[in-house]
Length: 347
Image (tube, helix red, strand yellow):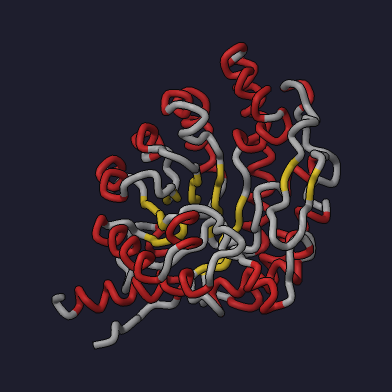
């Protein structure tokens, strides 16, 4: 028997973020599901789709119209704010991600941190703000529109350089805290602008990844700031950190954020056990092996594994590889419905 849905995609996402009942677990897009194939389908290629609001909205809409996800996300990268701050950019072609050239950091310490005049009006920030307005006008209250504002740790990597910033955390932790407390105001400013434009929720990437820093670093440098962000940004926040993060999930569960978007390096059941209902989880379908290199059957297996563990929203673990096959992405919502149908039928 086919599974009967009773909620709109937006209702489903917003209920899941609020830890309320849903007709089925939503399939979310906290980071990005744009691919070269989708760019070609709607004539919205990178890098233009990262810099033109109409193209950004057109490409973002495919996450729902073509893939069947319950949310849309027009911020495909992690570098819009950094471009507006004056970082040196490498915009690349449609089959590669735009990046910040971190070999030439623009700032050295807290005395340099400032919000440039016209920051929100910068074209690369306006691309996100205006594309959210367009998506809200197109989808209204039917589909969840998710924005994205970078956390201060991510911004610090871009403006100071990764290596220099990590050395600072050892040599002068107090200076690092001053930097982070100034950078967080950029996170709030850009987040509030997206909320005003119509964002229903915000992804909050802050890349204190398990590969680079410890769980104790998360507690020392970011826990208080993330708790503050959850209070100041008045929509549900989805924290995103890559890598193995089980060692900091207990702290993440104390942030007051709505959900945590987690990496496939973390076992779903172990993650659910660690957060113990204190924060929702979004994830964590593997990108490089499963979505990029394997097929729908393997995708379905991972979706079932997440749902069997109780993960509240299903999503790729991070922004998907740009050459990801559409059939694998489309399998995610299909698999969720199949899982629900099996349980509804007692299977």
